[in-house]
Image 1 (tube, rainbow, N blue to C red):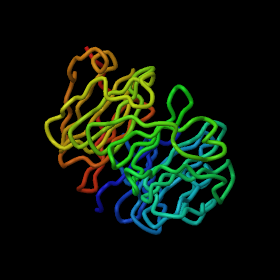
Image 2: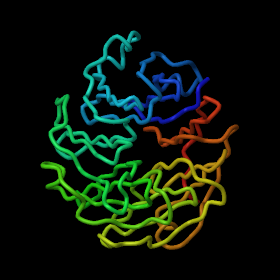
Image 3: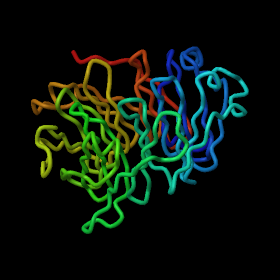
Length: 299
């Protein structure tokens, strides 16, 4: 099958898998335990770039064609889910990443260096965040993360983490400052209270939120081969994929300078990671398979 591009855990123990071929496969908890086939398929207009579940239970799918589709929670339990598209959001460029905003809104990151902001239920953006700047005229938006401060962190292909105020999430505008990663930022994830991680090809950069504008990594962890995916894990900490391996770090080792506590191995290079409600880690591969590893707790 087509390589797995992205995944997200669904309420109730399920999983949504987006592929480079434009399919979105839905699995329930029983499918995952039995290694069964998807119970339903949704179809995007192009390769699926990102998936997000809102607090309403709706599933948002982003594609490289420049669309973001919102499926109602009811359609996700319907075997004919592809015919139950809820709404299509008007996005001005290829969608690269999605994030839920405080208050129920949605942020959509694009290849063109813009983050478009949608109110709950809106189909057109009410405001934009300008990520590009004179030094990086086209800063591909790769990842979005709401920090504990309420600010939005935007990881870019230019190797920066742009910071936007809570007010900017309402009215739009430019970044209030930026932090600097060790390379192009592929993904952002919360690491432990007050800290977040940026995934680069070289490995993992750990940032202290309080460092603010101008901040550099508190610590950089080299994985040993190009890192491809990142996800928070049960009980705190992070899972980092590189090649066919998943490297597991607990929260204390990330901040305290320790190493990984376990390494899991898949049958093919990993392209996406997510953690299921059960704590199990799902690893999507370039072979088009999803391998599920039981929850692993540091000893």
